[in-house]
Image (cartoon, rainbow, N blue to C red; front, side, top):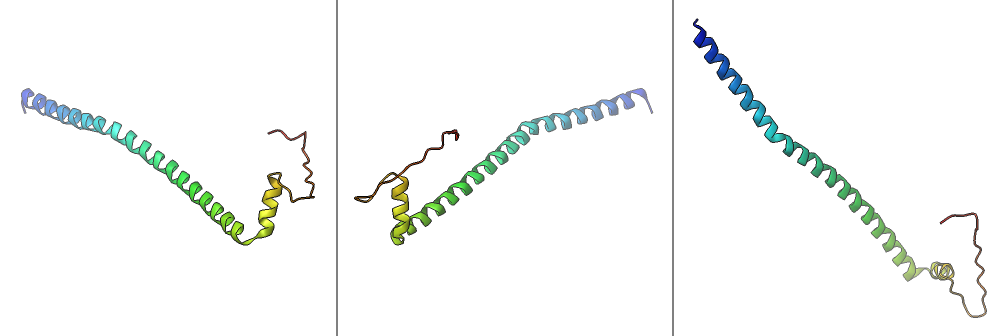
Length: 98
């Protein structure tokens, strides 16, 4: 085998490796973008789950407002409202930090 044949094969092999490596580097930004999109999707899914949970809580409170007078009275007292001739006492914990 002549030297030119060996050199020719080596050059073609090196060129093929360079093309493959170059193509691999073209996909690196897409891989990073895919990972970022997956991370963002997970965060949004968690946010949706929390929002759905909050909606369920509000629906339960709405149902209780429509059917439970004791619940309405308790919420009114928490807001500082009182019936006529009724005194509401509020105790403030000075050690509690808000």
